[in-house]
Length: 212
Image (cartoon, rainbow, N blue to C red; front, side):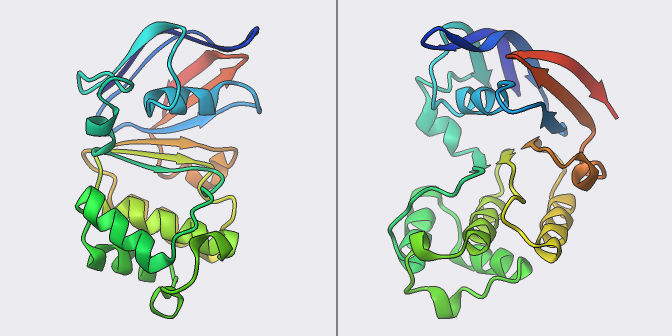
C-alpha cells in the first residue's frame, strides 16, 4: 500500500505538489493524468524516493521511500518516459539486473520475445545506442520479469509502434492481479481497458479521483 499524506514539493519558489494526500492499494490500476507541469512525475519520483518532500509523509508498505529506498525498490518496477543514458552493453545490463534484483535471465528474454525484441543478436550492443523503441521494449521486459508488487510506468508507450503497444497492454492484462499499477499517461484511450481508477492532476493538486 502507498500512503501519501499532505505532501508538498517545491523547486525553488515553484510549487510542484501542493499538500497532496492519496492512497494506492493492491489491485489499483491507476491512470495518472494531467497537463505538463501538473505534478504527475513529481509525485512518482517522490514515491520512488528520488525526491525528498518539503512537507508531509509518504509510506510504502510501512516504509519511508527516502530512508528505506533500497528495500522499497526491491518491490518496485519503474519504466521512465525517457530511457536512462546507460552505457553498458545489453549483456552487461541484463547480468547486472539479474545479480542486483534476483531476476532470472530467462524471464527477461521471455518478455523481450513477447515484446518482439530479439536480444541475442544485440547483446554486444550498448544500450545507449539502441533505438528508442528497442530501449523501451527492453525496459518493459525487465519490469515484467521482476514481477514486482508495485509497477510504475511514465508514458511507457511513447517510443513504441502500435504493435508493440498492443503487446505491452496484453502482457499487463495478464499480470494485473495483486499489484499496484500506476500509469502516467496522455493516452487514456489506449489504457482504459486496463485501469480501474482515473486521477486528474492540475497545478500540483488532485482535481478528480474516480473509480471506473
